[in-house]
Image (cartoon, rainbow, N blue to C red):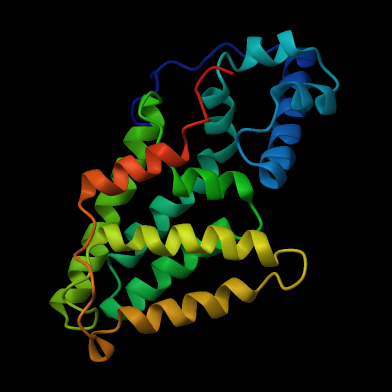
Length: 226
């Protein structure tokens, strides 16, 4: 699935040179500020760093989620590509570990992408479609590893949310002092997923709707408009 499969088939009119320069400046500023402060960073701050008026930002990106999608489309596409790559690897454990490592590396040092990986945005149709597709790919990666007997049978795709949520805090806490510490954390998590190390778990897995609601609640202050 391409992130662009629902895009219009006709190409948009090219922007004037000054308009393109303004848009490029906004994207560059937003990429830097979202990475350091998350996707709830003030849009006025982004416009100020780009050297344009807030009205110029809204002409280019009518909602906050329009700007978020423009900034993170490449990383989301990269995550889809990595998941699809994992699904054609012969060794299902290597595929499972590869996918989680790629996901965690995309998160590392980027608070904005951490927000996207950790949250759901039910009013942002394009983002919901992409995140739903990533979930389905993740589910297939888990099930394939279980079919080969290398991932514990009581794991569900919903359990991967624990990796995302915990890696969010680990990468944020250590990025300035030990930016590769997330790899140690992931190594510990991977050992917990191995079939040969399985012990009974004290709680049943979260249901898909429970994980979804938890992710929506994490994004409670993030809107598509402001």
